Amino acid sequence: MPPRRRKKLKVTVRRTHIAYRWRSLSEAAGLWVKGLLFLGSAVVLAWSVQRLWEKSSLLAISAVTVEGAVLPGWADAPPLKPGQSLFSFSARTLERRLLERYPQLADVRVRRGWDHGVRFHLIPRTPVLRVRVGDGWQGIDGTGALFPLQGDGAGLPILAPAAPNDPSTAALAFLAALRSAKEPWTEGLYKLKMSSDGEVVLFLQGDLPVHWGEALPDPALAAAKARRLQRVLSAPEAAEGLEYARFVDDHRVVIQPRTTTDKSEGTHG
Image (cartoon, rainbow, N blue to C red):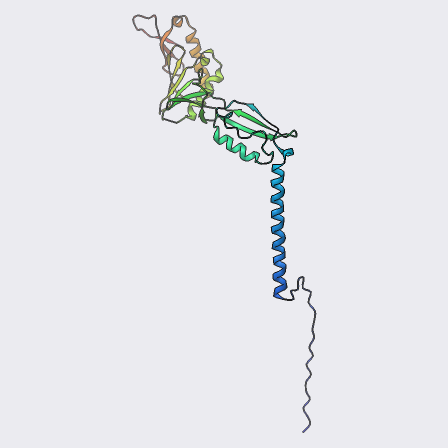
């Protein structure tokens, strides 16, 4: 019987390209430890440089300048003082905190100068109405924001809203429409009283009540009624003063002169 031929197996070994070849687990662990030590050293070095940067007298605030509104309590507790580090604060964070601390500000801008000075530009809100809140007065600007007034806000029209602490955007829109007419009596507006159903009573100088009617959001109609009221106030019948004036519709005004003894009413167009 012929001998069996053994079959030869051919084994081919090919090299593979591996970017990182770890010879042992200990070598890999050692590399990770070195990397962590390097990162820790870099963090400590950066923190040390920052502390030296902040403590350096060459980078201290030389002066603090305030432009704009004069705020209560600012002089006693200023947000920044000369001598502090010029880079120890974030301008954006400081602006946000000042707006929260002083609601009477519409905007705040904080800028660092090349002379190592810091400038605050304070933009106050402009009140168009005042409202009684508690024992004091607060102002309302054109956006409806409520903020404390410095003083009693003399000269500003008083708003008697339909609900407590409700600035009433309808009242603001109505007042803007009246002011757009630019009639003389609008400058002497003392009080604006608006009910929950939108009925408006105006009080002019001398505590003269004017029953306006509904405060419709139509500037053209408000301006037309304002001109009619100005003609009535300038009429000879109103020369001695009025007890009241009332719009019976959008075109007619009823007045009660103070000199009238029989309490008769006059109607004017």
